Image 1 (cartoon, rainbow, N blue to C red):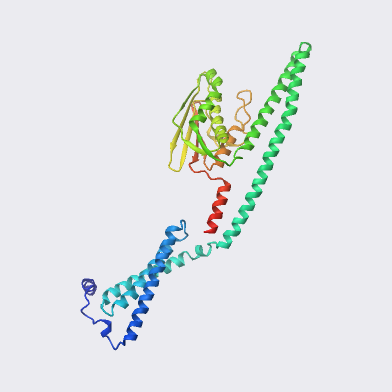
Image 2: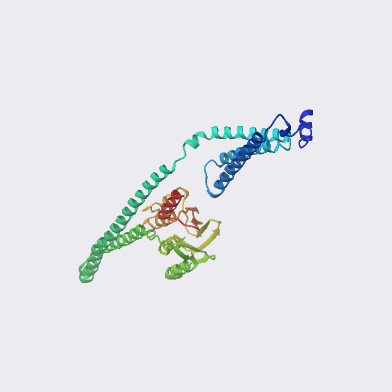
Length: 387
């Protein structure tokens, strides 16, 4: 240990050795060839880690960044040993040279261990050709998905109109039949006409809701949407129901977000309508709309004081055509919350609920501040493949 303490105490002491020019017989050519070679190697070794550092800083998400940093440090220390060798022709810094070589050895061993440790992961990294092939498959899949969606939307549109036309005819003829021959019908006949008309009307609502469900996310042109104005528009349209039930809608100041106005209106309208619909008998509905800014996304909460939902149905209610109550209790087609989930899924957010039976329900959902759809991801992949 005494030698170690003495080594560091005399680290910069160069009086024990003569300069390298005085060690042996150096010709000018031989000496300067040695010096210039070491300086050239040092300059090259300095350039390599600088390039690696710049690459890691500029290229975000580089795999195995620790290996890059270790390899850069190893090259840098190797270069310092050559610089010290060149300097020792004038300054015999043998102790400093030994210390630098020791650090070089430690970092080199650490680099080897890191390379061995991450070898399998490094072998698994894809080449640019593999990325290009995957991007081509993604683009083909996206084109096929876009075409399929367009065909599905066209089919839903045509089917809805073709189905609604005979339903209107049925409803019209039933109404006309009842008006013309109502006096001649008994109670059972009138009941059959009423039930048939109600069934036709439910079918019309179901077809309309299915059409709206199929259209969610069809428009990729996202624009700034003022949610305050959107919710005010919804409450104005629901004024008749709000006044009839004595409901109160309490909302905080809502943000303006990028999105599609129709999708967002369906989202908020379905949730507010459900909060008004599933109310407790004799209790005026109270709906509260809140928002929390979570840096990269907004988290919304729409609460009510209604009948509540049992915990076992928390996920089921977001599936299409899932109803927890009979039509005689509450009207609806079982598509509203499924539409909400589809909107949130397209926008890259999450939706869930918390509820207590007999106390009320709170539906939570998140919407990212920067919404990316499939076309934007494809464009991003194209850009990255060119870098």
